[in-house]
Amino acid sequence: MENFTLASPTTIEAALAAAQQADAKFIAGGTDLLQLMKDHVERPQRLVDLEGLPLDKFSIGEDGARIGALVRMSDLADDADLRRHYPVIAEALLASASPQVRNMATIGGNLLQRTRCGYFRDVGFTACNKRHPGSGCGAILGVNRLHAVLGGSDYCIATHASDLAVALAALDARIEVQDSDGTRKIPINEFYLLPGDTPDRETTLTLGEIITAVHVPPPANSERSLYLKLRDRASFEFALVSAAVVVAVEDGRIRAARVAMGGVGTRPWRLPAVETALAGAALTREALMDATAHAAEGARPLNDNRFKIPLMQRALTRALLTATA
Image 1 (cartoon, rainbow, N blue to C red):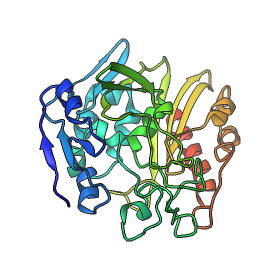
Image 2: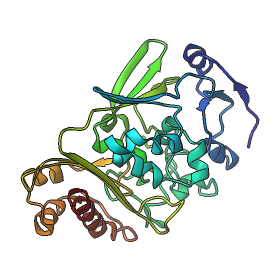
Image 3: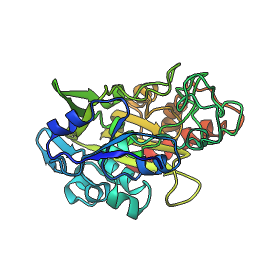
Image 4: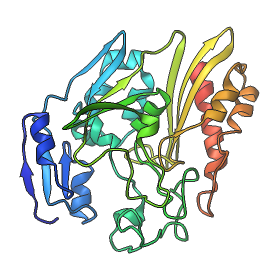
């Protein structure tokens, strides 16, 4: 880890002022950033500690849920109201990391965590366009079992790491951000960027802009939700494939569905073709499998990750069957 200066502001305005330089980073729980700094992947010269800011409140009302950016993952997952109204969020949080990490990690930090691509996190690999734009992508011709089959480019195929973001994508959540000019709310499905030829730019955040909260719409009548995560081991492991489903059921059929997947895309991946096919579908395995057959449309699998194509279809079918049982 390299030397850095630390600012500890007590207001959002002071935090924004302290971060107005290109080599500054915000830090809260630090569960991802500190590891990246120790490994010399991230080298900020200035850290702005957010722990003193009033962004740790959570509430549910008629307009939905508002989750402060500094709410701890464990506290949110343990909230009885959240588990009742938004089980998909609680399930995604509990499937993340470990209890020790969840006790420290914040909601805002979770949404901004960096990819777990080994070529990005190990500076011994020189070819990584996320770390060094223009250096190439070691994963494309290397070991790519854990990498994306959707949304990749010739510059990057790294998967997005957050379980929570997948659940929020299926819920049509919005990310509240603030800078010196005020606040704005960004639909989460527009918040993350495809890698294209600039994989080092991952979100629509601008310099010095800070996440202040997450807004989740209220659940509709008869709406059910579920998060399913498939991984190599049962704890402290990132998704091979995950599925977040939000479905409204009426008279034995799916009235409407919203579906997002993780572990397969370079960002949390919504599946509009599957959602369209699910509208009006009967609650049978055959009907659901017909709909989930559209899950891999547009996929570009490589040698090591080709197995994700049938796995994502089967995982999504299982999630839908469980959610509608």
